[in-house]
Image 1 (cartoon, rainbow, N blue to C red):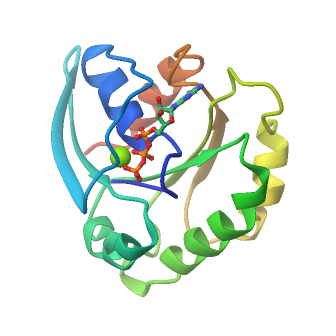
Image 2 (cartoon, rainbow, N blue to C red):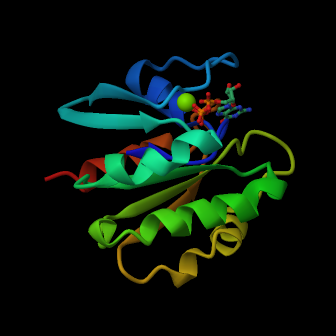
Image 3 (cartoon, rainbow, N blue to C red):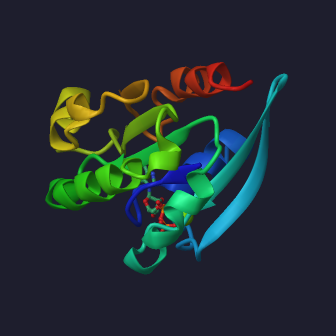
Amino acid sequence: TIVGLQASGKTSFVNVIGNGQWSEDVVPTVAFHFRKVRRGNVTLKVWDLAGQPRYRSIWDRYCNGVDAIVFVVDSTDHEKFEVAKFELHQLLHFPNLKGVPLLVLGNKNDLEGHASVNEVIQALDLGKIQDRPVSCYSCSMKSQHNLDIVLQWLAGRSH
Ligand SMILES: Nc1nc2c(ncn2[C@@H]2O[C@H](COP(=O)(O)OP(=O)(O)OP(=O)(O)O)[C@@H](O)[C@H]2O)c(=O)[nH]1
Ligand SMILES: [Mg+2]
């Protein structure tokens, strides 16, 4: 399940891994969107959730029982880091989501002024998360930087 604030690049991620389709024009997601993504011999079942404030209260329901939670953050939008941190920790607080592996993507690293992976780790206080495996990568859906390693990580979470 993919969560994160609006316009962080969640749908772009699904589009790019699904069919290599990058676009500057992506329609904001309404509520959620389910997609099956095939990569080689791995099939990912993906819930792409909407990031606008009014949809955040449904995130936890779609994270229940999944193999991994992917939290996408726009690493150029420094002003939103505080809200992103709040929403992430609020989500992880749900007892039924305890132990679910977390992958944080600092997206849009093709743009100037993006936070480094260590800055994202600091900004979202990832060091504080002790009850699950956590990984964090800096990446770009536009240039596809680091998407191979992200897909490897996801494939490794399946069972
Ligand atoms: N430069 C750059 N732009 C990106 C990148 N990823 C996404 N975008 C752009 O960011 C905007 C928002 O992308 P979406 O994929 O719709 O974001 P979202 O997180 O799905 O947004 P919601 O569905 O509203 O929650 C679009 O204009 C994308 O083209 C990236 O890696 N680099
Ligand atoms: Mg979307």
